[in-house]
Image (tube, rainbow over all chains, first blue to last red):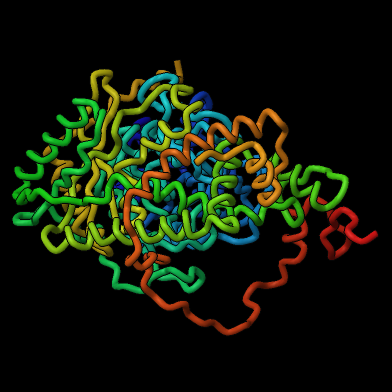
Length: 485
Length: 95
């Protein structure tokens, strides 16, 4: 059966439960395909041998009551995996082997998932194109020399290239939804506090959130059910009643009110994005929802706010990389010199840029002008959403202001790179759940996504709307396996 | 406002990142274009707005001060760039 790798997670689980495919056969298929797909550079660390061994062990003693019975899964290299190297895409963690497991990945292994390997990402998740990774560019399976988005670019690429049935990413300003949009896949950022941050290499702690990435909406609901959990080890994990997202998934969304924020019609937005959005509105109507115009007046301040809050938190989080207890160490003539050289050689350009911005905005005399100001504007952005949700159940926007761009096209212009996250960043600032689903293509046949934003803890409604719209849109990725030729 | 080379060098000291002249100049350019973009926030009057410090409206939980991990000293030390028995080694600090 050569088609194993193109099955959805749901189909693969069904086949394994019905004993039509064994876990080991599935693992072999994904490993074989990965061996032929080195060119797209999705793996930082392969766990293939161990995966094959564990899948055999599963087959010898199967447990079909698990939610992910013997399913091989590759994960973003930002999740710490016990005794498997975890780099965060950085030279400074090139040789780091965690002694503990992140809660999110542990949840996956507890339900029968088996680690295939660790996927490339932008260094410390700072980037929108996977070009900041120490381990090199990742190719988008859609076309050669196209970025897969970022920071979860290895994840989106591996998924679209059928190298993993499903995967997980992290999203601080759009790092799940934007790469999903660029690769014609589905990516969900849950409400802040849904998925534990324990064991995830920290970028901006008040914004970071892990979430599922999948070939369709149903698969995201299955994976979210597994990874979302209350965790005492994360001080901001929230103890709320989680739905059985996959069994409660329904296309009955009649009468739901969907808001269209006028401020998301930004200057210079290409026509095709505008058209896609209009098409999305029609699909939403076809699903029986009511469309309501809303206003999120502080939208234009979201990116500047983000580029204070995120670097500030990053500069603080990344202070731990000093070459003392783990990671890279460069030699220096004294302790301070060692710190400075280690961080200079260990961090890439984008990470240094953000640590510098963060250090500056938190430095003596500037805190009130920048960080405090940004926290106040963040409050206003959150209030915009609070008010909108008095009138609507969810919000529909484009996922990104453009389709995937060429490798190298934006890497010399940080601000133009940052603008990529214009529609996704407000969602992180307000801590809301948001999903990107593929909804069409641009003139080059590159995928474009639509984003559905929900109320806090209302992932179920977000998934239900996405599930209904997905059926109407009926998008299919056209992957030619060009990298194997 | 503009961030000059002197400021960039001062910040790099605070951030413990050594920079050569060329990199410092490039960073000054980048930081200026980013701050130009950030300055947009000054259009807004936020005098009476409460800062949003955490999106999770929960009070921090207490836990017992108890060791939960098993003996992982060996594993932890394996990641260290330089060690001596049970200690991490750093360049000489005291003369």
